[in-house]
Image (cartoon, rainbow, N blue to C red):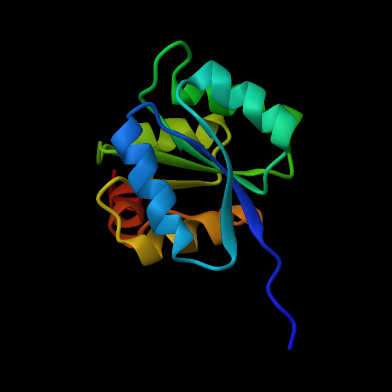
Length: 141
């Protein structure tokens, strides 16, 4: 019986307790492993280039270099790496900005663990991932 290949994820979040919580949530999914962490946008770019992960979970509000800028830098350098933008702001303009910067998907910080894992899996495969409630708002506005 074959095992699913592990998806290697870079977790970029500046708040230590949130980074720990997300890492612990992802540990519950046997096909996902956190290969590295970053506490600011510049570190996220550097670690992404070093680790070449399958996916990056990128907080949009970070010091040094914000998430949108980091996404725009990572995307052309690592076209095979999926990027999942993460934020607490349910703003369609921010979703659009993240997708235009090069993110494959977008997730709110109030997402359920299963939705986080689905998002990571989708962007790692190069697919778009936007939760239904945000997709409906994007269509409407």
